[in-house]
Structures are given as C-alpha cells and as structure tokens.
Image: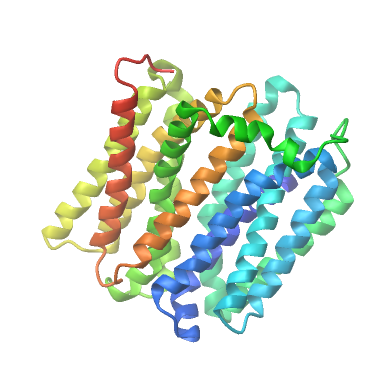
Length: 388
C-alpha cells in the first residue's frame, strides 16, 4: 500500500517531467512562441500550488478515500483533455485540471500515511515516499522520450491517462478510509483560518518567500532545457532525458548529506553553504562557456548536478525552518510552503521563456540570480541569529 500511495504522490512531478521533452514538438505543431507554450508548464505549477493550499482541507472534511479518488478522477480527466487538445487553450485547461488532481492526491496520500503510521515512524515513511517520487522524476523524461520515439506527444498523455486509471482501480481495491473523525459543521473558509493567520506573521512570510525562491531555479532550468538541446547544442530534444538524470541525482546527494550531517551543522549553515555552491556552480558554467566549452555536458554538470547538490543542502533546511515557524498549524504551514514553491517555480519558468532560446547564458544567469537572492536574504535575516 505504501508503494501505491507513493505512486499517487508522484503524479504531479511525473506529469510535469514526462511532458517536458515534448515541448519543442508541441510548439511546432501549434505554431506558438516559447513564452506562450511555457504557460502550459508555469500555470500547471500554479494550479498544483493552489491545489496544495486550498484542497487539503477536503481530505479532513470528506475523508481520505473520497478525496484520493476525486484527485485521480481529476487527473484522468485533465490528461484526456490534454491528449485530445486541438489548440493551446484546451491544452492549458487540461494541464491545469490534471495538476489540481495531482495536488489532491499528493496531499491526501501523505495524510493517509500519517493516519496509518505510528508517529515515531512517520518521518521514515515520508522519506520512503520521497525516494520513490525522486525515482519517478528521474525516469519521467526518458519515458517521455520513448513515447515520442514510438508515436507522438499525444501518446505521452494517453499513457499518463492509462496510468491514472490503473491507480484509480488499485485505490478502489486497496485503500480504505483511514480518517478516524471527519471535520463537521465548519465551512471550508473557516478551515483556511490557520493559513490566513500564518500569512500575517512577518517572519513566516520571509521564510516562505525564501523557500519559494530557492526552489524556483530548478523548474526554470528544466523548462527551457529541451529547447536548448535543439537550438544551442544541435542535439535531438529526446537526448534531454539522458542528461536530466543529473538533476535529481545532485539533489539526492545533497539530501543525503543533510540526513547524515544536518544535525551537526544546523539550517543556517546548510542554507548558506547550499546557495553558495549554487552560485559558484553557475559562475563556473559561465566561465566554461566563455572559454568556448558550451556543451550539454558542461551545462548539466554545473547547473544540473552541482546547483542541485546545493539545493539538496539548502531546500530541506529552509522548508523545515519555515514549517517550524508555523507551529502549531504545521499542516497549513506545509500547504503554504508548497504553494510558494510552485508559484515561484511558475514565475521562473515563465521568466526564462521570454528570452530567445539561442543561448544557454540567460537561464544560467536567472538561476544564479535566484540563488544569490536567497543567499543575500539568509545573511541579512540571520545576522546575529543562532542556527535553528
């Protein structure tokens, strides 16, 4: 059952990353510019973030099983709309619908794990689910490449639809209601009161914004990389899936360092170290480009592996600190942190879409600027403050 719940959790990252290799093909078919097509990524991220923030209370009010089933139905409906879209508006509607469904399955699956797992083992269970989600992220672009090679970009969406149907049937078979007592007699707007209260805390606002900015460099990079493979490196977009593995691998290594040594160093040190590594990785990439070494290997080794290693050091610490600041409303805190990450990610994706895909330099500079801003905020806000 844990594997099934992890698969439901992975729907969002899977749907985003399996779609990315097909972006140049979709652009050519619909005849739109890069900035317009990037909206199918950025607005899907916004929908996912809004879903995390607004749909979470549904699992408390109506139960885990109905919420999980509703999320899967939405995901399947959105995938069908995407697969059959005759134009960009319908494609956008399908992507956003699927993202809302994925957000509901994401947050409800984690709630089920919290219901059925002893409190002292919850962290381990969530870590196991995260590992499976990282595997889904690593393999999704390669699956997209296989679908592109054997059919069209629509084949990716039909495959995604089939996966959603299989999960729906398995959830109907395996998942029982785990919520001991539902929230009754309270309007959904009232259930959002803790989130509104957190948004009035100035320190939480700062930490939430910092976490969002820190995450945004990753989707900004992956959103433009398939175009760069074609226009800058003169390689097929399908090759992107092979290089993409370097991104979650770097994050995985950074996360492993935090698990092993995080208690020794503290969040303030890890955030500063991670963002410093990220800035230096981008500077190294620009230096190698200036020396005439503008290749996919250089780009993905620096802004891929090294930058994401830094994010693996900094992001868990920044997220945990923001959620700690939200106590006792940590559920609402997680929702707000997730929303800020997706909203900032959408802004980053859309920002790089306005630059012509004739050079990799703009996206490297954007990633460096976002990471440097987080580093500056950390040094300014933590001056004279002990590490958490």
